[in-house]
Image 1 (tube, rainbow, N blue to C red):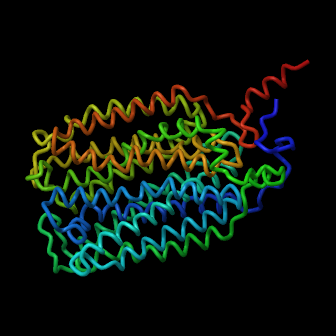
Image 2: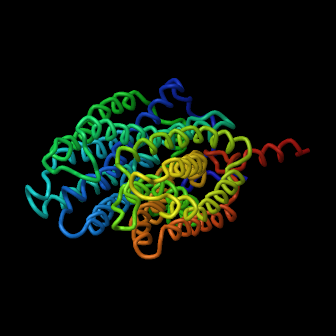
Image 3: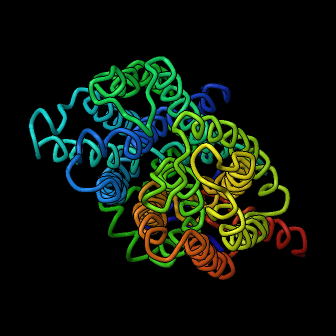
Length: 477
C-alpha cells in the first residue's frame, strides 16, 4: 500500500531523480560547520548572559535580580525559535533546503555580530537591554531554521541503514560550538585578568574584551556560507518536487495531518533540552554565583576549565549514540538513555549541595567535574539521534516545518524557562529540586517515546517501514 505524500498523483519512488554529485565529505562538512557556527553564536550569548550582561545591561537591583533579568532575555530567543522554524520551514519545504540554510546562517551571524557593537546600560540606559533583546530574538529566528535544514541535509542524503550515523554530524556542531565559545571566553579572561568574583568595570574585559567573541563570529559565518553555497538539493526533496508534491502552506498541512507527530517530537526532545541547559547555562550561574545568594562562589575561569573538559564527553558520546540508534533502533536506545537521565536528576543533592561541595575556593572541584561529565555524556547520548528521529516522523513536503516546530517548541518548554526556574528553585527550596525538575522532564519524554513507533527502517519518500515491505514482498506467492 502506497503512502505517498498528500497531493501527489505519482508513485513514491526512490530513483526518479539522480542523487547529487556533491561528495559525502562536503555534505558532512556543510552540516557540521554550519551548526557549529550557529551553536557558537548561541552559546557565546549564553555565557555572556551569566558573566557579562548582568553587569553591563541589567545593573540595577541586587545580584540575583540582575541574573534573573539576564536569563529572561536569554529566553527571548527560545520564543523566537518556533517562529523561525515556521518562517524558514515554509521556504525550506517550498523553495528547498539549500537556499533556506543560507538564509538562517546569515540571520544568526549578523545578529551575533551586532551584539558585539551594542552600547551598554551606562551609555544609553534602558535602550541597551531592549536592543539586546531584539538581537537575541534575531538569533533565535536563525537557529529556529538552522537545525531542521542541517538535519535534513544529513538525513535526506544518508546511505541506507546509516541515517542516524549521518544525522549525528550536525549534532556534533553543538559541542564544537560550545567548546569554542567557552574556550574563547576563557582565553580572554586570562588575557585581560578578569575575575568574576571581583569584576572591574573599567578593566579591559568589561570595557571591550567581551565584545570580541561576538565580532569574530562574522569570520566563521563567511566560511560557513562558502561551504554551503556549493551544495545541491537533497535527492529526497528533489524527488518530491519531481512528483509534484510541494504544498502551498506547509504549516497548515502539518497541523492538519501531523499534529500528533508534532506533539510526540516536542516531548521526545524535552529531556534533551532540559539536561543540556542545566549543564551549561544554569550550572554556570549556580557555580560562579555569590555565596550570599546560596550559590557556590567558584571563580569564573576555574569553572570554565571544568566545562571545557566536560564538553569533550558530550562530543565523544554523540557518535556513540548515532551508532546505537542505527544498531538497536531509535526508540529502545532513547528509552534507556532517558531512564538514566531520570536517575541522574535524583543525584543533584549528592553532587551539588553546599554541605558536600563547600563554597568558594574550598569547593570540591573534582565532584563538580564528575557531575558535569556525567551530565554531558548523557547529553551526547540523548542529543545524537534527534536529527534522525524528528525528521523521520514527517513527510518530505512538510518535513522541514514539522521537525523544526517540534524541535523548537521543545526548546521553550525544556530550555527557555529551565535556567530561570532552576535559579528560582535554588533560591527558594534548594538545589535538589532542580534535579527533581529534570527528572520530571525526563518522565514526560519517556512517556512520549513509549507511545512512539520505531522509525529506524522508515523510508523517507513513502514513510513506509522498509523492513516490513521487504518481508511482505519475500513472502508473497
